[in-house]
Amino acid sequence: MIKIQANGKSFEVTEDTPLPSFVESLGLAMPRVVVEFNGEAKTPQEAAQVVLQDGDRLEIVKIVAGG
Image (cartoon, rainbow, N blue to C red; front, side, top):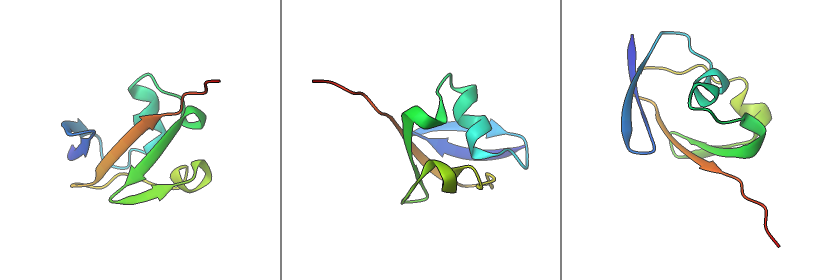
């Protein structure tokens, strides 16, 4: 198990967890969120390539459309 931070909370995940799998485990859909990974915003295509490592820090923000 590795430890990561997401939106200020600690999580333990298995090694080799893909970022999209973690986001989905939170009940969120990758196309509907913006992910900042270790201080760098990732596009959905970039996020799909990320495998979480011990100590990673995430900020996950839901995209909300309005008018």
